[in-house]
Length: 376
Image (cartoon, rainbow, N blue to C red):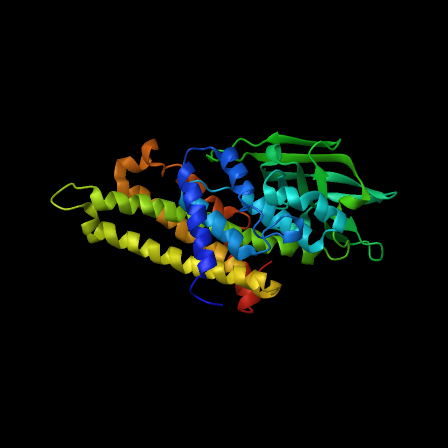
């Protein structure tokens, strides 16, 4: 691993930054998504033989980070190419890969991801969405909450549980559910969060799935699940870091020119030092994100799991502080729509909560990395 980016990565950053700059915080999410897909950015991590760029999570994270730094992060990048595309590319059948990956790579097909349940919270072992065999297919029943972008997705990759024939115990499995499948319904969850992507509650009532709706091996659920969750954490870090960089750039630009007494306010240490501290925190979090992406792309799932959790934690904390400081630097202007910062106060907190809370990451690090006993 090098601490200096390759020329290829620098070129990718520059190209994506230029694309993002043309859109800024204009809210034209659909147009940006379509253009990013046409340019090959959305599928940069997917195999070339299925229309992708043949690169990895490091490159996909760069794309999302730079779009965020330009003010136009695409939340569905965390879900469609990073989680769903990765899982299908690694564990899907040849038919599944050919059906889904070219569209995901081009951005013409989007896939949502459903794992969270109201009664399970952070305890995925309490997931009650279940699939039972019926003939050559499956019957799916259950509920999911806080599932992003289902209204604009062609299908949803659902984490359910099936019964082990030998032990009777339930084990996690992944199923692709088409948006128009009979028995599959959705309802919008009203959110205070200002975001282009809506959140949904999903209901599955005897949803009949063909046998090929199962992704991967029925007996390898956790391996397949974490193959998608590690990229999710890496991309959440990229999402947070992009917003943090956008906020800091606006604050620094303002502090350089805003004059209240004789010199710009950025000359005062009370303004300059907090911004410098936030910049340091963002850069440190980015290093951990790049490490996590490097480990994942190298095939080290265990190492990537630790690093991805740490990266997500560090990026979320850095981003929340950076946005808060940026708003404070601008004073009243920080709350004005003209500067595009106030809406980030709620948006950036998502990275602290989802896809896993900071407390659960601290639990993971304390018992997995430090070897401390579990409290649950």
